[in-house]
Length: 379
Image (cartoon, rainbow, N blue to C red; front, side, top):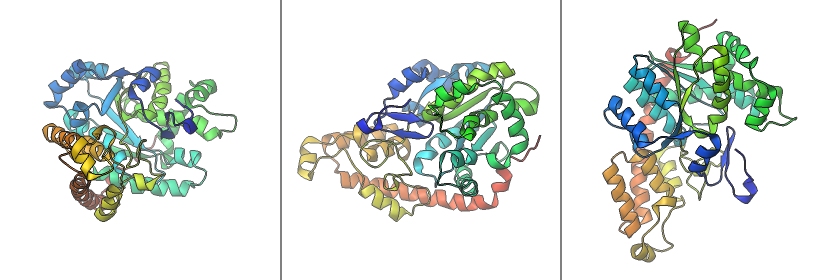
């Protein structure tokens, strides 16, 4: 979906997300299904308690999630697949779907294929060399491992290094997809390079790797942000032609940036907290962030603030306050003016600082473990 960015309208493509995001509109225009209460109750039967990202509808949309549960309840295991386009350092917004994916792996015992699309970023970013995107892929993999995925059940695919099986499956997929389909799905133009025309076949491959290796159909569930949906629409169309199950999807919202409106974006580093930022750097960014507060302390005390538009509150909502009761208290304290924005920022900065310290410790430990995770099967 592409609108006119100059008019401040929503832009949601696999390569760009900007403007105010209307998630109900995305559900309608992408043709996905909302995650309703009935579906949440089915999930809860298996998880015991709903993950905060489900309770708070951060994961809000799906394709065939009910079918995945049907298969699981019928005794069929499923694999997970998600990924990262390594064009720069990882920020906290990138971690949101990864944390949820780890939860799914823990609860359902699923194998995970994590795709590092260093080839895609080379193709769509003129300023990046393939050597640079590959280097970034290995650096970003440290963040993936730091999330805590099971090394025995997790394989990280480095696209530019994984010829063999990736290419053999990709050309079978590519043969079933027309150029007109890709052009329409991704808004490509005559000037688009032929690499990016072929790339959707590469991104489809991890949906089917487990089926290929096992010699039988294995269901696949993709937890990812909704901007990646065009890839899976194409993949779902081609899957039956190749004798595979259509991959199911569960879509998450975007963590808002620290500025006014829009998602967190590495292209605007002041709106992001990177996983490699020091606690002091993060605190400075949070202190300078836009809020839903009033211009003065007096007005805030009198009229209260608006947490709905406040990225500081969103940080609590998405990641840094798992207790729903306490989250509602934070919201109420803002609405009633009991808490000033500076106080709220300082409390959040402490939590973010602790999170970064712990994540960076795990990130360094991951350097000695990375080879355990890299997908090396050749075919």
